[in-house]
Length: 140
Image 1 (cartoon, one colour):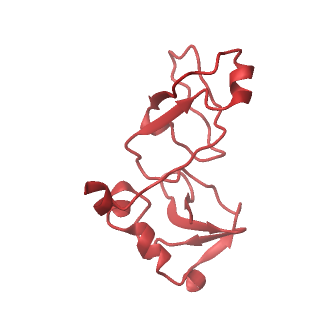
Image 2 (cartoon, rainbow, N blue to C red):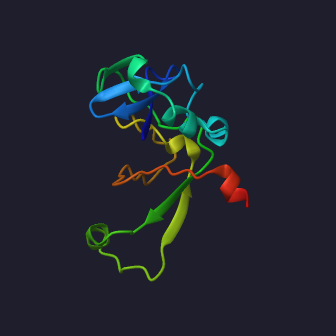
């Protein structure tokens, strides 16, 4: 399931993307947020017949950040050979793990806000993936 939040900034609606269609699921869940996901939002949406829900063509409206107010962004650096060669770096022996500010997550066509005192900004993302697991299983 490809989750999405679609609409104007601050007015995004929870949705899923299926092929070239955006299906709005905000009648089932309030938003794609941590609390909704912990309460089984993925399962609720997956159990629902989406054919009767409002939909629009993909690209008809702005696609926002997929999660409302993410709590953390964990990144892996120098994780593929093309980037390592491009950076003229050595292949790391262990993964390079770092964090970004949660508000660094934006929609695919949104502006990137560069802080005024920034002297180096990396705008590049090759792959962004959001994964969740059953909270009950994770607590065992």
